[in-house]
Image (spheres, rainbow, N blue to C red):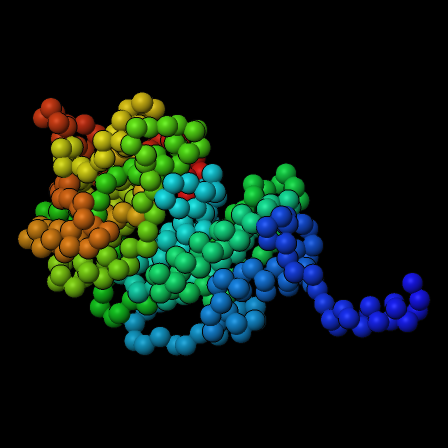
Length: 359
């Protein structure tokens, strides 16, 4: 080839041309975490493409955000290491958004912004990463809570497990609103927003390739809309909590200890789908200790229990809500349950990990 032909060919190549990411076939490599051109390209062509908003577009190491009005800020952070990364009803992407939004919302706050930090393993498929980031973007958009800043690191092959995600959320609590695990009082009613154990059993079924006659789907969801409807009911709500790891049993034990009270559950009132009940029986698990990612526990004044229940059932995420127990005085801070046979048993703290890496 002549020198003239070489010059002509070179001129045809766009100046500063960088080969686009091969999302379909490409994989994460160490250069994507180096802080150089490859990392900038990953951020621009994948993360910024799907998560784009006015704050993220600032492009700095942090986001300059508008000052909220009167009230107090709530900040919560959570790391997500779920295995498998994709499961019926969701994936690690939407789960990382929902989980942190819910942690903020349980404090009575309106979630405003999220940050997201990714630890990627060398060799992870870019197609899978794009699927996760798209899922995050869709979940954040649906919730109205944008991801405004983030970080990416890459570890060597064999030193991670595909992808881990840490999300941090910031929200605003209006002056005078007090929701805390310390606020449960004797006489209060205990409500749950829906069926228990769906998320944990969906993860277990997918992980172990278990086939059940009725498929079990994760309940992962952002709950701040349901909570807003509950507040609008005018009910005197004392405690909100999402029963994730350790399930309902561990969550109620935490609240009982914080508030210095005892609790009594009614087994017949607990909403559990037949599929989850059967799967738990097959695996020797107690659904009270199985994780949820789209359910909440509410403790309110007994006089407002029916009003609150009606408000919850009127919302799509609370259609299967139920009053499941009550709070009483107990110096030992025990959580107990009246069984279907009329006896009583202690519902103790979870002593180990029934289902590791479910969130």
